[in-house]
Length: 462
Ligand code: MAN
Image (cartoon, rainbow, N blue to C red):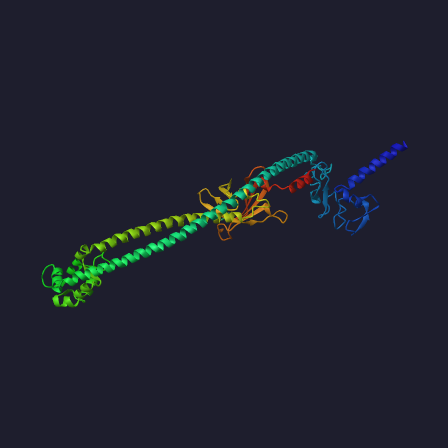
């Protein structure tokens, strides 16, 4: 009998105690050990222990009411055995909504029948963590392969750069030689032209000298009216050295001493002097009668000119090849100077593009290059060009920034932050625009998997 009474008292006192100190964590239990009195945790007030969880707020820090909604700043501890313990604001206690998965925030008097779902939640979360760990393991394995591949590609690119530099040097030498040849050929053509001109002038002078001014006057006076007109001058004479074209009216007027027609005596004072000296003008007919040595010179000139043209054409070809090689070298150098991560593991992402359709837009990310957004009209909008790595101090390679895109209407340029998340495939997983013209993308890739994530995963395991 005595024994029965003792057991009943102990059981009752445990029930009372546990009910009174609802909503506190194990580490706070020591503040609520049943005594005659309770001291607020901030030390502000001492009171009888009956005041704990009596649904009246006595302590300014809310510590006397951990299990009721009485204190506005109080907090309730959900023990959530089998899942994650956490605090909720005590205003949510007995409010008819189940907040703790162990149902502890709604007491038996509450009308809400709360079920304990912690076990299920815990199982689901453990399964999730395990699946994440499997993904991480696979991702890390793939990353290792990618690193090995990147090393090879890097070496290949270095060798390619050396080859291209050699080709560029060779082309440069060819260009130098061709430039010298071109200068020589042009000089030759120039010399031949001068010689030809001289020969023409001499021949013309000789021919004019053998004829009297009267002979020439009669030759030019086509209608035999005793005067030479501008028309007759233009019909019979051609300019030196520009024999290909005719004389202009102004030139004819100058040759006739400013007159529009001249008689024999005026002819002798004006046009005859020019013809005699082979100065500026010659009789068209004489062109056919130019001596053979001069005609031969013309053939030489043509040959020299075509040789010069060939050199110029060769040079153009070499210059074009040099330009192509130079651009390849520039691109390659730019690539080799890019930060592709600690082990150059991001190298393979360069030259790849990833797309995702979100609402009416198709977003495209081309790592280390640019981000674009294409609307239904097909118009492409730049959301930024490759800027830099902007991750955390521990891992700067977990985030990229693309800047200087199309300006936003009445705002700054569009820009994009790309968060890299670990996965077994490389793909664009989400695109958001949390504020106008500022985009956030998630790119999943094995390259983003980190050994350190294993520790985080283990720690989050329940
Ligand atoms: C376009 C898109 C949107 C952006 C607006 C801003 O419609 O680029 O993403 O919010 O312009 O005017």
